[in-house]
Image 1 (tube, rainbow, N blue to C red):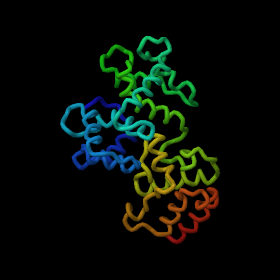
Image 2: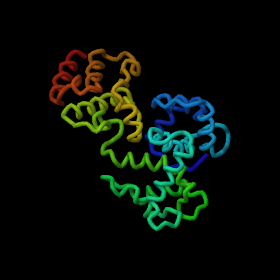
Image 3: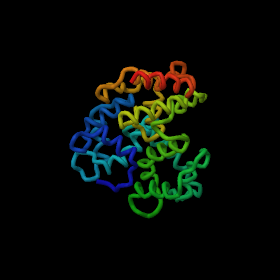
Image 4: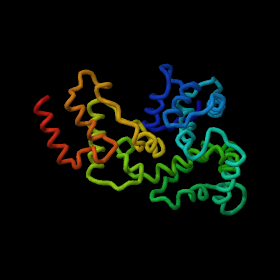
Length: 268
């Protein structure tokens, strides 16, 4: 396995994707790709697993998943395998970051990939990103290493662009739409969902997966009755309304939701 350093969010995603043995096989990865509407051929999936299977046991454990996740999260921007056209595109990106033209990216040049964003990753985050892909341990990222690092670089850029806590952010925030008081209602609904069930309606750790799950207007939040035994239908309906993907279908303010919640509480 690879090194640790994954977040609790990544651990939760891994748990949801892996089998009871705590490992992901090619089939599990294939299902994960289908869940974000990116089906792939079986041989592509197997090659993808082999790429991140550090101990070559045919499975992905949690530490190996940390490295794989950046690539998974960036698949809307990249692909499972790199063809000649994409390799040329990656070379252009690499050269645009290589300010001194020496054929390598130093710490400051990698940090340059984030300079136009509203938020900047910490120096520690950038050093850790480079460390994971610096195969020859020379403290720099070469073009071949950049090809492997790019997916996670995009995922980190994505995370820096979004302000808020993933899992509580409403669909309109992922879809770059106008926020309103009903946006806070969605966050409140997610909080109530977690308080009652012990889990969030959507388990996401980055903007790409958030957009694929929360931002996709066709993917509904799970029903509480499918998670919590003997769930009160009135309370379930209230939370479901708060988590409606369509803003117009939600309570239009926290005050409206509070009034309804008080009415439900009397009947519980």
